[in-house]
Amino acid sequence: MSIADFAEREFAKVEEAERFYCNYALAIGFSIRRSRLRRSKGGVVMGRQWVCSKEGSRSKKWTK
Image (cartoon, rainbow, N blue to C red; front, top):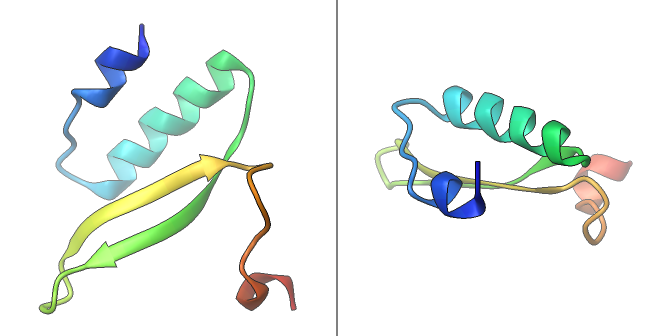
C-alpha cells in the first residue's frame, strides 16, 4: 500500500479511519495520536487529524 492509496480513501465513520490509520502506522513503524477535530456548526464531525506520536508537543490541556 502506498501513501497515494491512503490519501484517496474515504470512511463512513471517524472510528474506521482511526483504526485504518493506526494499523497503517504500526505497519510502517510509528505510532499515532489524535490531534485536531473539526465539527460543523451543527456538531457533525467534518474532519479529524492524527499525527505521529512524537510530532511537536501535546496541548497543555492534556499535560496537566
